Image (cartoon, rainbow, N blue to C red; front, side, top):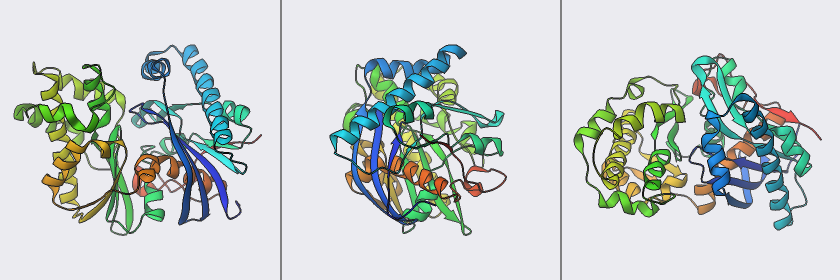
Amino acid sequence: MMKNPTFCIGLMSGTSLDGLDICYVRFENTDSFEILEAETIYYTSDWRTKLTEAYQYAAMDLGKLDVEFGYFLGDQVAEFMQKHNIQKVDFVSSHGQTIFHQPQHSFTLQIGNGAAIASRCFQKVVCDFRTQDVILGGQGAPLVPIGDELLFHQYDACLNLGGFSNISLNRNNKRIAFDICPVNIVLNHYSKLEGLEYDKNGALSKQGDVHQDLVEELNQLQFYQQPFPKSLGFEWVEAKFLTIVDKYEISTEDKLRSCVEHFAIQIHKIFTEYDINNVLITGGGVRNLFFMNRLRELCGIEIIVPTDSLIDFKEALIFAFLGYRRLNNEINCLASVTGASRDHSSGIIYNL
């Protein structure tokens, strides 16, 4: 059992590959927290290339990258602690970087070896939160909703706009959650064709026109017809989504604008279906002002955008929370969310 207060560091590296989010947080109990320090370590082009191409690596090379990335994470934690003069850390909780996510085959892989992390920052490490869930028949995702349930229960729903958009909410007194559609993973892809890392403020999207036939074809994707629990991965985006968009011989701006329209429609559909009146929105997509304005126009509900620290570091915060609950032997994966055979406490612990 962890003592109160507990001080920990959460690490999150998402599918959009912007960088590593590091969050130093204090937990008093299961519903009280304070973010003390937080920052994003942006990936070098070398690291971004490695992580982007890792799904194509041979097994031996992927094993090496797992350890190399673990060393990198541990070094970043050590530097973060030194920079902010952090003296008290009870553990580090790391999501890792997803390379494969195929729950239909009971398989998911996040690299960033926990023992390698611990060896560089000299802290207890909790990691690999998804594997146990897919072995129990779940999607292994999303994992953030238990944090939404316990830390942000005052909102009808919590929506994250990251590489993918995912939502969590209560239905019939049970927490449910699922991925809605891709967001930044697609917008960043097309922005890079114009020499940009991302579409700042939605400036490129704003210049484009909506191609309704493209939007309608995207809306017919099989994933959107499936019931929850369901989750998305890069493989699906590459095989199903981008192949449709790239059939259209239109400008990059028009592709971006049409994708923004499609994403807004899919999110609005979920808000309507589940009678959402107010929603807390976090994640990098909140910075896309054009997309957010389009979402407000289409949805017409109360949209709450929190402080900058929560916008940018909510997922890192909640992965710290998952580690906190794991070390307390408390449930941190909800069957109602992932579809696993039971609620469970997931994560591998590496002690020094």
